[in-house]
Image (cartoon, rainbow, N blue to C red; front, side, top):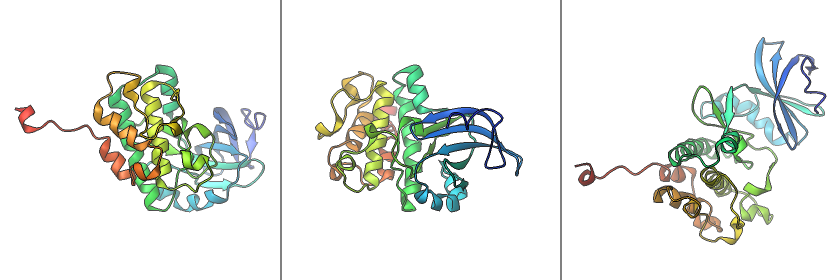
Length: 252
């Protein structure tokens, strides 16, 4: 796919490639000009299955209101071309790689916004299924967006233990993945001990002392070994990632 992503290449008869902006195990993402509509797009060259993505095209505008970035069009081929809105900025994976562990307040805010996006997806019967730091976008315009919704997993490391064992995923698998992403956001790395061996979940406070208890507890519950011990809804995780308000006595 590298040759297809070369600047100046015309793909699908109308997409003029400007430059490559990202790469994954099964895809290359390019900045391109849609010559038919006269707009700049992010064009993902994808060699995975597209069947589950077709529904997202129909709902793309609605999902975008909840900061879920999905294809607005799919041009079938080998590889398929997924046409997405271009959101200039970075992603959480790049931020972690550049800075190591991020500030707890920033991690909680990113996680809270990501959880709210999952609320919208889950209410529509959609699972993300592929949540990693690289799929949490941080646009220059602000806010947090999720991308690669309903695509084939690109990293086994962020899959919930039951999914690794072959069980069907449910919303709690997404919450596990988000909890693990937040752990990595705080510590700068995946846990040394495989998460499936930790029934009570991961504690970032074991790696750094400045993690507040409420954030530590939220991540631990999200990454519990058994789905029944996790948050059951994304809205619960979003609420748990809210910093506690000072009591009146403390404020006084």
